[in-house]
Image 1 (cartoon, protein in one colour):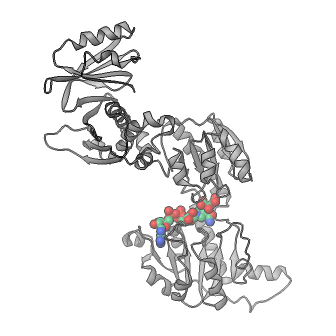
Image 2 (cartoon, helix red, strand yellow; image 1 turned 180 degrees about the vertical axis):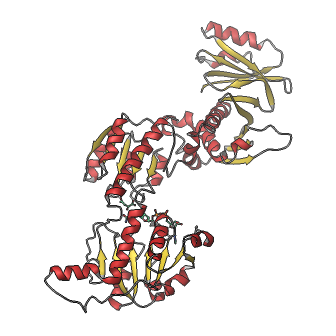
Image 3 (cartoon, protein in one colour; image 1 turned 60 degrees about the vertical axis):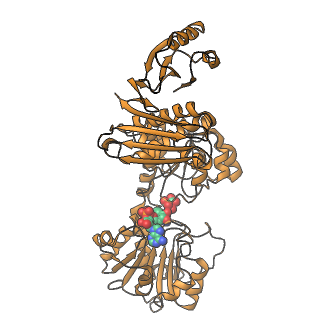
Length: 529
Ligand code: NAD
Ligand code: MLT
């Protein structure tokens, strides 16, 4: 599946190396920062690619206006400023650079912890105001204190190992990181209920999503140690801002380090102006090193994707990921071709259509869902033309009510291996197809249980018909084609089943009127793969 990107818009401040790499690889790059939403809606129409940081809000209306867009690249981690569902529905890849700013965000978090312990920003501001207030800024040691880490992914882990060197005890919680893994980087795994009362400092490192929004709220603050200090260098809203202000005012919370806000820049400055709050304008990734890494990474990822050599960082393109591996690429092509053949047999697919895709053989392990997406793409292609691709095929199929079930067996004794079987049933018919790969090309082996004497390459203009076994159908069909000036490039036939044979001809062009064959064959169809 080719994703050509000729023109690309960079709409936020991204390291100069990004533009350079893209241009060196033949992509025209335009940089336009600080556009209003209306300006972006007009501008975006012209581009195949968009690179952003957190400033540009890529909402559904922006995506719908982006008629030529193929890829949205986020030079950074969080993609909460991109409508992923709308991107997927429109067949647009969303990609991020999850590793580029991990160290910078972790270091800022550690800086916040130190500043909260020793009131460094407040002391510095006081001196600049001409004061010498040694008593006012009495702090605390980190040594021997407990740091509670909510979210033990990339940044949470880096924060843990750094703060251990200060002699802090690190405890943490994450729904997907097992306790044994957490212990390898020195974090004692605890439940959130255990984390709140044990921690002197709590730092959050999760994405913002319904399950993490307001994780620290009135109820959970009440479970914390009196005087707890909290840090949010992840996403605004994970710590409920109003609850935090109440906790600061009551003394339940003694200090907060905030790099992120629900609204950025925040209009309500009550938290920012609170004497025990250290606030930064979303600086977690604002280091030369992180920006260079993220800028280079996103450019290289896009270039590799265009070349078809790898697909790194894609968030919504599982099926496409298989399509770039040389060993699985032909199977994706086979799935799409089988889907197109099945569509030619069944006509319109709809809510009554049920599809089973079964892969068999070690080499197809873990690819069944990708192959099933490719089958779905083949099935939907005729109806939706250019609107469907490997990114949105499964979603569009689901919305059309199509049931697609995928399964895989490494090897079933007695059954053929390294094959893909497709069964499709509609309200009026059902068919079975068996395909495989020969010399990297998709081939059809069987139709409705009848095996072709030789595997049929699935490419080009194909005329498929079913006729009485050993009849004169071949001569008659050849005559009709010859009269229409069409040549037969290859001819394949199955064994006879219940007195009939399936035939597939590769022809130089499709027949304008398929009805010309109706006197000679039982059913016929044609397609171009
Ligand atoms: P990550 O995906 O590596 O880790 C996030 C972890 O949060 C995952 O392990 C996940 O299982 C865990 N998690 C999800 N729900 C949870 C819950 N309810 N409770 C506890 N843990 C939960 O992400 P990361 O790269 O470590 O980034 C973490 C956050 O930091 C993200 O929100 C990211 O956008 C943000 N970030 C901010 C800056 C900045 O400039 N301030 C820079 C980089 C990243
Ligand atoms: C991120 O998620 O990568 C950060 O918020 C940093 C940024 O916006 O660039």
